Image (cartoon, rainbow, N blue to C red; front, side, top):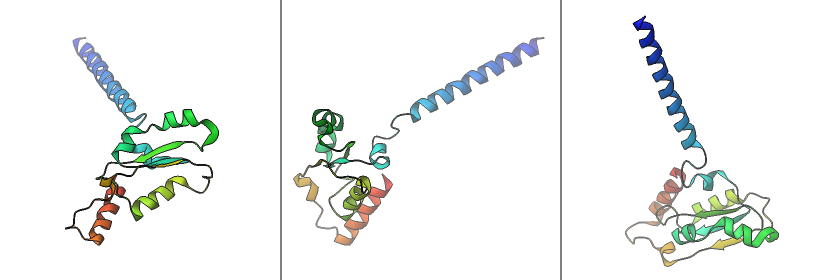
Length: 139
């Protein structure tokens, strides 16, 4: 009799632990798993391009609300930190992929700061391009 109670309690505990684990796993995978997830998985009709000032300071939802139907939706904040994106061919190709061919009335906000164009004199152009490709592909 005591063995049956022990097995029942152990089974109940195992079921509770598995249910808790699955619940937490489900909750964490909903919404955005990574803060850059939507930048790489969603198309945009309008884009915000630049570095961290544009990433942190411009809100696509406010722009969509204020401008309404005057611009193509959705507005996608495609701005990154300096270490993740520099102006160049790789960023241009990524922007072309974001827009697709249906964009006809988009709003494009380009935030340019001196940091956008800085690179160490010790790094050659070919190495810089390879670093740029690797950074954008990994993120």
